Image 1 (tube, rainbow, N blue to C red):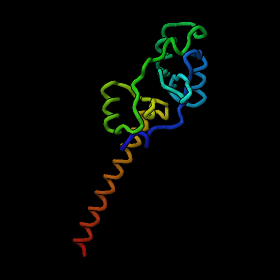
Image 2: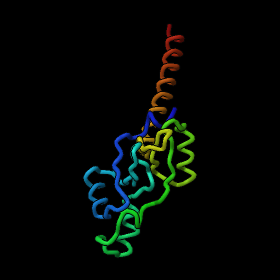
Image 3: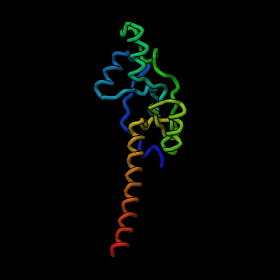
Image 4: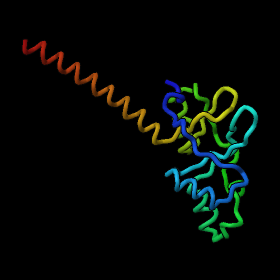
Length: 150
């Protein structure tokens, strides 16, 4: 199973020079907890950073910095861990666990942004797989029951 099947394809992005206020408004508008910071070139959008709602709270609000003076570039995580859309889902889960990240930008083979993989996406995969296992056990139990009851 590869992550291209499970990642969210509609990624909300921002630029380096966007203000933190603009970024927060985007997060609110789209009900997301992070924005992928991108650079634009002829091929498309390339992920160069990630900004989370936590970054805004820890780096701006908790430090009592005037928000109007802060840009996305000032507080984003640079060079985020990125996954390729054909990467294995379980290997990617392990990478996220080891690195302690909850969101990964997903790119194609050229490094162009195609999605984002979040812990919510992974929970969906786990839920689906658990459903398959439960279904398998249920079928086995039904077969055994039928075998013994004639």
